[in-house]
Image (cartoon, rainbow, N blue to C red; front, side, top):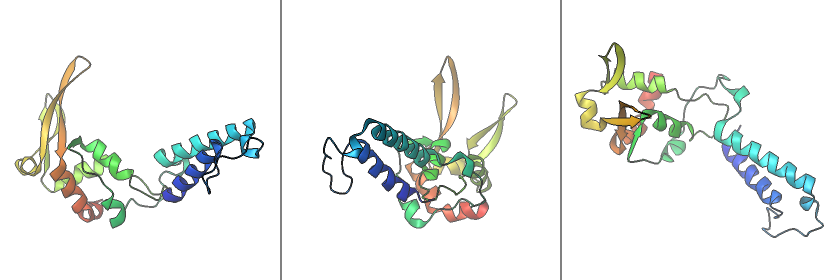
Length: 178
């Protein structure tokens, strides 16, 4: 399933639901079929379904066997952000997929790759395994951020722009690892 085609179809459906001819951009006459309340409601419903499929994919299609991989064009659409946890980076990478039948990149696999190449390590803290940047990881832009949330505090691993660029630039190495 092609994500770009779905986006294009969703835009057409949304225009029609609004009573606009998606080809010409003109408002359709009041007596046009598109302005029938039942048709309008149906179009808005289909529009919402398409938006959800575009953002989340089709649940039944998960793990169809198409391994995760991105083209160079898809990877070039990654927008670097100041500082992010790895979970958000992986979500942004998964959002780049045009093929909705493709499996998602797994956070666990990226963590394991970063540990394998020496940028992260597992450290025992209070009998709990915690991921922490190595000295090399710190030099490349991985740091700990102390967070206060719901009356508790904890550390999260944050990735700056340079390390995000490293992950994107070395995507083939990550892909070969998984």
